[in-house]
Image 1 (cartoon, rainbow, N blue to C red):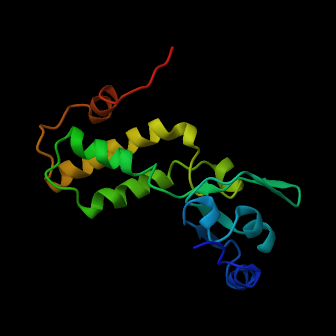
Image 2: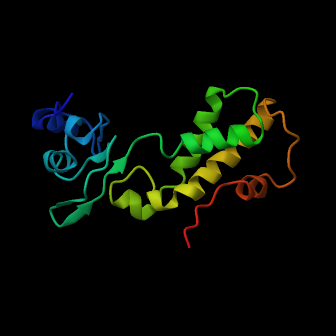
Length: 167
């Protein structure tokens, strides 16, 4: 695709929204609909920006903005692991809805103040575990889990996660 959100479009969106969401989800970065820098400049620092590929932080008007990376890295590992660990017979849409709810609670106030809508990647393993636990809980509630429910589902999931250790 490539750049397709110009200044006129961003300014128009800003007429209707105080903090417009701008998602430039095409990959790779050179194909993104708009760069983070231009999105923040054209919106006068008001937009909340996420892209399919990472962008460097942007300094605008004395403030540093860190864009979110809006891809499947946060949701799919937790949904996949949570589904498989309890041997779900199917993966219904509700798993993804619950995963999104968990993910939304993982963004802290500091990240929101920076204009981010996704949490830091450094918390990916914990976020994946939280999502996996919620997916497993949902599977039991929906009757699609085929494994007998563990007494402590959180511990059961975390004890079975892979923890890379390169020491």
